[in-house]
Length: 108
Image 1 (cartoon, rainbow, N blue to C red):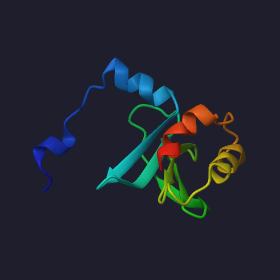
Image 2 (cartoon, one colour):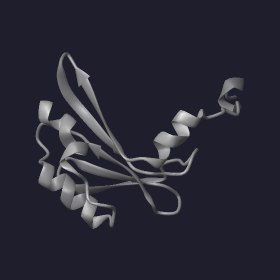
Image 3 (tube, rainbow, N blue to C red):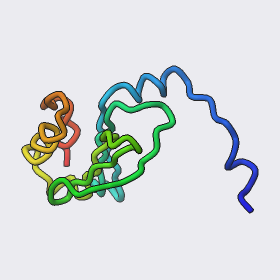
Image 4 (cartoon, one colour):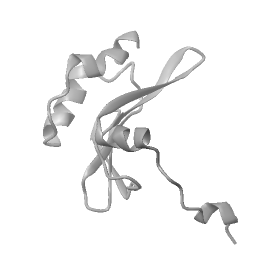
């Protein structure tokens, strides 16, 4: 049996809902080194990943149940080129990604 909290209905703040409408990059560090990155794509609140597919070396795309891309997993940010990320964005028919959006990867 699942714990009771698993079925709780959560309310999303206006800030969280706004973030779901915007594209943004998040990088995870361990011991000062980047270990992963995730490019969040615009998505519906409460949307869940239904499948994941490889888009390029070190890049996976998460899709919702309708087949719409929800996010891009970058498994080794120090080894995936900006050009590879840009090509995947174009292949997904998303608006072009700017250097500014990818700027956090410069520190990698």
